[in-house]
Length: 338
Image 1: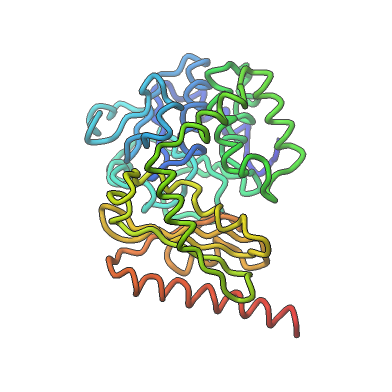
Image 2: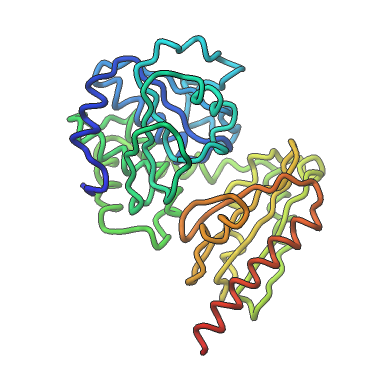
């Protein structure tokens, strides 16, 4: 167990709480959702009362992870006053105000104790006690550590979402973040009842015609530069209606650019139906994706990161992002050849 987290202190905090609320980031992925669901199961095994309340509803393509509809959307399924008697609020898989969406104001105005349970580097000035392991490949893996710390036996209901969290945040165990402990943790989750075949099928073998058409659009727009080291593509807001896809169908499409031999850095710029553009970055070189994302107010990991630009001028956004990425990769090349 990595000692970046003070597990003795974590145990104390959990022991002192009875009514607990779990929250993760907006535009949730499997690590966000899976960590919330897995942690909820862990805490409930200890007799805690747990609610999961987030700033956005579960995306359609990931609803299989929450068959009991446990994840509530603030302002839609529940109001802040409904959980004013909370003892502890755990924020998982983010340390940034902007990623909390509508839950940010709820947390700012609350008086109950708050902790952050995260694996990302850096954090905003959130009035919360930090429990972070920046070497962890996913918060899902930290949740397995938490179960061991708290003496909770893994069950299928806990293991299934946590396996999905780890598998997706590691690119199904192919990213450089994968270590020996990753596979040991996965083995524990299999022993706890997770079924990789079922999880993979639910994630990747339930495609809609719209998502397939959107994938074709993304593939057709891929361009390569810098002798093939940079690959980039984009999605415009109109593409959803034109292809019949949903905004959530953009998940993982950036990985299509990584399939091109020689790609060292990939970028996808995704238009949001609510306005603005979200960028995802993937790195297989020395230029860290999270450092590039930070230039645009985002963050993440060395290999995978994201950011958001509040502008509806696609040409300006694309030029700004690609100009910066080109400069970063060119500087890396020049340094390596000096």
